[in-house]
Image 1 (cartoon, rainbow, N blue to C red):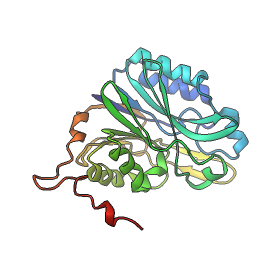
Image 2 (cartoon, rainbow, N blue to C red):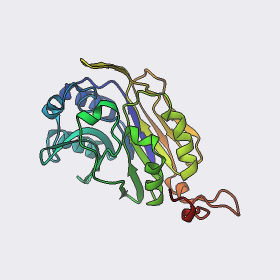
Image 3 (tube, rainbow, N blue to C red):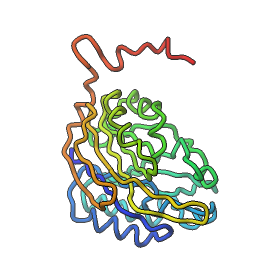
Image 4 (cartoon, rainbow, N blue to C red):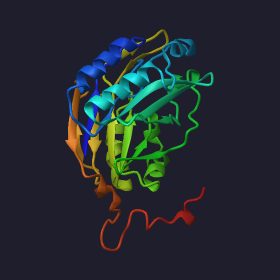
Amino acid sequence: MKVGILQFRPVLGDKSKNLKTIGRFLRRRKFDLAVLPELCSSGYNFSSKEEAFDIADKKGGETFSFIEELAVKTGGAIVWGFPELSRGKLFNSAALTTPEGDHHIYRKTHLFYREKFIFEPGNSGFKVFKWRGVRIGLMICFDWIFPEAARSLAIKKAQIICHPSNLVMEYCQDAHVTRSLENGVFIAMANRSGLEKNRFADLSFSGRSQVTDNRGGRILSYTASEERFGVVKIKPELADIKDVNEFNNLFGDRRVDLYQA
């Protein structure tokens, strides 16, 4: 399976420019699965909920159509982040869009910093979607700091976790080495780069997008500032092997009866 991650600098409030940039990076590339940053269609650092409402997308809207057309043209599925408007509520969401026209949506569970004033807490739960025989899980940005997020997806038999992000702290990239190792899964994390300002805070994003394999090795990684779409070939079925050695298994050896608070 050919997995790609896109790192670029979305422009706050300029959906047209952001979609053009996404198209420029992906349109002539071949991949099976591409992961884009969190809120890549809109930018991240909103000053108010109203500002986010103005650029939000509904399922079946223009941004969905654009990403679906891109998936059809490239032949690959695309995971992308966007502000989702649903029944009057605003969520920080990601969609897995396939060339067959399916849109599987995950809503961010753990909101970070001022997101709590903009978005509703996600209510989708952690889901795993099967596409062309590969089991794909989704989480978004700050979900990484809660080990239960990746573990929940791994228990549901995800082989690869797609992680659209707008990271401002420096720890996630190293933590994913552990998340992959302790769960035996691949993680494709697409972060953004650059700086965004609003009247409350200036946010500088850490870049360093990466793909880690099922043993915690970095098999594709970027610098903090580059804008790039790279592709790496993986074998998702390796994530089904949970044996550490002939006597130990990552999940078989769990003592869930002793893990209660």
